[in-house]
Image (cartoon, rainbow, N blue to C red):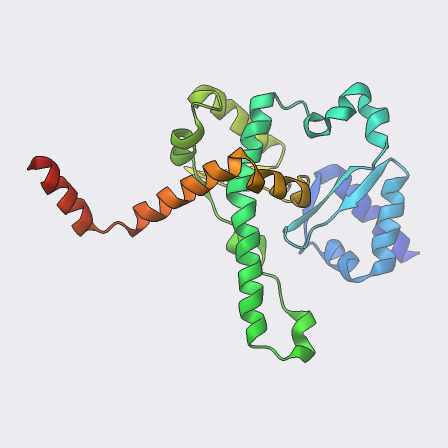
Length: 234
């Protein structure tokens, strides 16, 4: 009976709070207790929801079950990316931020996991810890974002409005000038689908150019800057 009570409490808390950290006591238990996990999923399924978990993210959340979205949202369900009423430019901004934050985060997690694995025997290979998102997730400078994508995404006033929308929905967090991964950024966007589209599409080339420019700027030494100034004066 206690197990079902825990399932009901966890389901209720997820509905009330929208997301919970993986370190939450009941979430931690559910992640290692298959019966409890199934009980929570059964509870949520009764109201058309499913439990969403991702080992690359630091939180868990809920989402509509496949098929239910068509009933709940009607015609708009066909536009599944926009069932929270985000305007088109906000969706574009969301994809850009997802690309700038989640893609490099996944690369860092894979690299760190490989580094840890090099020091382990094959007996413990299956127990390699995956780095937590907060330890490897990059932040995006608001100033750089505005400079690189402001003209395409509505300039400052519109971008500020959409950033507030994304923060309210839990996709991002604002820390002064920095934009960081929010609880839902790596949970509600399908990495397997979106990563291929971003990397193989036009945005992939733009992001790669942005990364190269940032790397070159970071590698430029004060001596290089002095030489360039002297050359211009000459």
